Image (tube, rainbow, N blue to C red; front, side, top):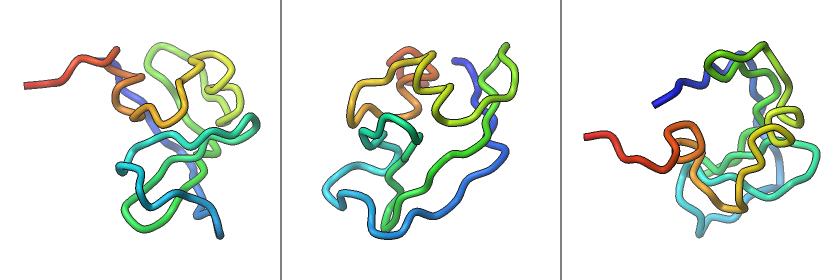
Length: 82
């Protein structure tokens, strides 16, 4: 599986759906929002394996995740590690 290096993130107030699993991507066209256990973070700077540093919006445009997809599933192509 490929790696995703998170360089910067921030806590998002008033966002999230507690029914989602941690790691779920929350639909938003301009921000990469990820559900944590009790909160939501916005990933602001990241580096996907083999790519240059980018912001969350650029990541969304390039990888086009499905709503509520788990972040790890995008990176590993849906394959579980054993």
